[in-house]
Every structure is written in structure tokens, then in C-alpha cells.
Length: 400
Ligand SMILES: Cc1cc2nc3c(=O)[nH]c(=O)nc-3n(C[C@H](O)[C@H](O)[C@H](O)COP(=O)(O)O)c2cc1C
Image (cartoon, rainbow, N blue to C red; front, side, top):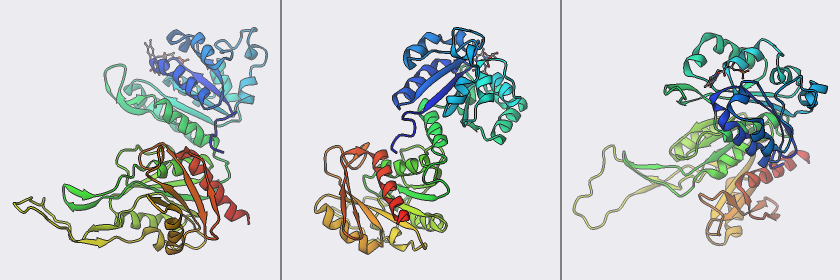
């Protein structure tokens, strides 16, 4: 199940914030993810952006007036609420949040939110003082207490010129929230999945380190895929460039020793460990507390000590352990050796020199090899899809 939005029906409620200018883009992204999108606008929203913009993106009627007999809602006012798999209010004004919190049903948007049995995601967008106002804070708390996901707002520059909380989340982040909500009852619901990511940094001195080329994308994708199947996903990441994924509990680490400590702790009550991090094999034996001077010598050497083998050290009973082998040659033979050494259930082996695969890429071509030596060669897939195939295989261990 690589895409939780494929074939799903999303009611997109749009209220009258200046952030409306980003709502058609959000609608477009939802459509591109395979969703059927019904847009329901407030009267104020239609002053910022036209129904035409949404209709031409979604190829579906747009509701602005609940009493319009020409529209579906004018005949059946709860039709959209009932068929939706998720209701997303983006942007959500302070006014819309207040109306939802108080159970009002005075237009098409609030009627849809009140009538739906589907999960609701509300994405606030407003001036910082409006957001900070205790009335809005209480309304947001009320929404949360009723199981509504209040996604955002982000902190940043606001339309007023002020800097603070109130910006609507980026469409990609909103979509991540929607995916997480849609996947809540997925096949990993109730399971804890720990994924690791990124290349660890081993300090030489306070300004220099040894590391590797891992971007962290594969491990981040593993955590996101687990989240989208309902798992309680934890990401232990050494990546320095990727943002925290939405709906995932993130532990930031730097060195192999930090990674070992965090993984040991998180795996105590976990059911799955996907070890996609590139943990350094060696670290400087004695890192300097001060910046080392280059001096006049023509060559220099650095004494290295072995780092702990993180995955081999985790022995939680019943934990399914999945490793990764990033190889440049003899990919499958090297990967098979690691399965035994590290006590893995299976390993995802990839040739990091292959075009489109490996470090920094968004796609990966891997071979899944298990303890029994069975090999499943996957096509070139996005890292998110690879992560789903790995989780599919994890599930097969519980089926038998
Ligand atoms: C130019 C302009 C920008 C506005 N931007 C926001 C906003 O970002 N967030 C907000 O809560 N209200 C904003 N408002 C106020 C709302 O449009 C107003 O509260 C309206 O009644 C909201 O109606 P609705 O929630 O039914 O869409 C803005 C008003 C104007 C005139």
C-alpha cells in the first residue's frame, strides 16, 4: 500500500484566510496523489480565491452555498460529509475554528465537519495575535480533545509583516498529516517501529568529523511508511539536512555511540527495527578537545577505534530486525554475510553505485535477502515504496 491517498475521497474545506492563495496548490497535490477532492468554501474564502480555480484543478463541482439547489449539498446537505474518507480544513481561520469548536453548522463547511464520521484535520492560518488569543487557544484545545488533528500552524513571517505562529503549514506537510490520519487503522496499528537514518558523525576535534554520504532519505521514508500504516513510528536519525517527518517521534543523534544508546532505548518495547542508518565503523580513538593545528608536517595519521555494532547489539525478544547493506561490489554475497553477523531477519542490499539508486537519491533498487537465503529483487522504486515493500515482508513474519 504505497499511497494512502490513492482512490480516497477528501473534503477540502477552505475558509477566508489570506493563506487561501495556497489552497488550490494543496488541492492540486491531493489530486496528484490520487485523491478525489470535493472543495467546500466559505463565503469569505470565495473573496480570496474563486471556485473556478478549485473546480478546474479537481474537475469536480465546488460548493460555496449550502442552499444552492443546483449543487449536491443543496439537495443532500450531508452528502459530502458522509462519503469523505477525511475532511481537511485548510486554511482554517480563527472564525472557522471557533465555529467548529462550538458545533455550529451555519454554512457548507461547518455542516460538513459536524456531520462527518471521518477524521478531521484542521490547519490554522491567521495573524499571530489572533492565534495567541486565549479564545483561539481554547478552541484549538477543544478540537484536539475531540480527536481532531490540529496541524500547525508554522512559525514564520505572517501577512501582517509580524513574525510568529500563524502560518498555514506547507501543502506537503498537510498531506503528510492527511496520510498519517488515513493510515491510523492500518496493518501496523498498535505496533512500534523504530527506523534509523543518516550517516553518523565521529568527531576528530570540535570542528572536524569522519562521516559518510548517507542522506538519511531511506530511513526517513521507512519511518513515514510505518506511520502511514498506523504504526507508532520512531526515527533515530543522524541526518543533518532532512526535516522531522510529521507524525513521527524523532530522536536526533550524532555519533555511532549516540545512535546505539538511542536505538537500545527505543527498541526495548518495539516490534520492528529498520536499520537504514549508515553507522560509521570507525571513530577517532581519542578526539581532541581543541581544534588540531595543521603544523608543518607533510603527512599525518589518525588512530581509529571500532564503533559498536548497533543492530547486532539489540536483542529485544520478538523484535524483527531489518538491516541494510550499501555495497559497491559483490552486493548480494556481502549482504548475506551481514545477516548472520548481525542476527537480522532479512536485509535490503543495494548497489550504491547504480544510477538512480543509493545515497541522496529519491529512488532505490534493492534485493531483499532473508535468513533462508531467499532473494526478492525489487525494481527501481521510490524509497517510500521500498519502505512499504520492506514492511510488507515484516508482516509476513507475523502471518506465519
Ligand atoms: C485581507 C484579509 C485577510 C484575512 N486573513 C485572515 C487570516 O489569515 N486568518 C483569519 O483567521 N482571518 C483572516 N481574515 C478575517 C476573516 O476573513 C474573517 O474572520 C471571516 O469572517 C472568516 O470567515 P470564514 O471563517 O467563514 O471563512 C482576513 C480578512 C481580510 C479582509
